[in-house]
Length: 203
Length: 208
Image (cartoon, rainbow over all chains, first blue to last red; front, side, top):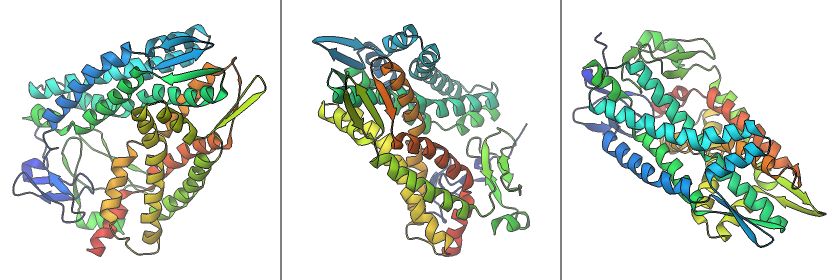
């Protein structure tokens, strides 16, 4: 199958307004909206790897350090992401426990795995189903934001319980690491260019 | 109008996910065009797109103000009652020395949705009146980037989980801000699906 791509005709779609622009060199600017136009996202592979490796490093402390510290009548209880899930599970709300497990544990690790796989497959010139790989990318990109849920839980509990006065809830070190993990994986998905999948698969 | 011209001019576009060149086709009102090779969403045709989106954006502005001003949750425990707003939670995190977490929440739950709504008002009100607001391209581009970081639907799930964790410990009363935020999720989703960005970019061509 030889599909006609924009790049094969010396054209690039403007990232912002979608106008097809004829490029002489590697980059130019859009005559309509004046934004910078490239054939492919700038340095996509290197940038995505850098953000991904950062996320791999930070996801460990994010899961080891407590995300939430509850102090009640002098005793402090520390909760990690996983122990928070177990607490919900043991207190009878298993649908919420499952939801939080998916959002805070499954999604971040799965997203790291998917982006790693996509990067490796592009670099090795894989020809395996570009349609399925593009779909994997789309899902990973859309699901990432839901990992933020634990950060919000800590914020809301902190505000409510701390002001209540009986106990204090504080965000732990893990929460900061986890927040950065979510942000870096979102940036990694954004910097990856799915057109690279097609460039190598159709070549 | 773009829709009438599309066939005559045979506008060619490239898929932003697989780079396939294809002709822009006319679809019915509300219809979606997808890439013929990778199935990626290309565009959605909306009649009176600017007017519909402007009306929804005004509704979103009202909800946004309620969400940020009114109490979010009230907490009753042992005769004690505490009310919180979105701001008090973020403030509490900041005071505890967690500025990073506070910053992330501030951006994703307050600043990004507010920017989305205000920027759309700035763009769509003049466009509706047939004028082109200054900096249209820059502001419209900024909205596209900022929208990714607007996460009120995730914030609502967080609220649900928090309430579940506190149940049994105290009585939780949802405030007006919570309902407003719930409405804002659906209103902003409708804003996203009612605006056909092509209509906005086409105005720029006329202006240039």
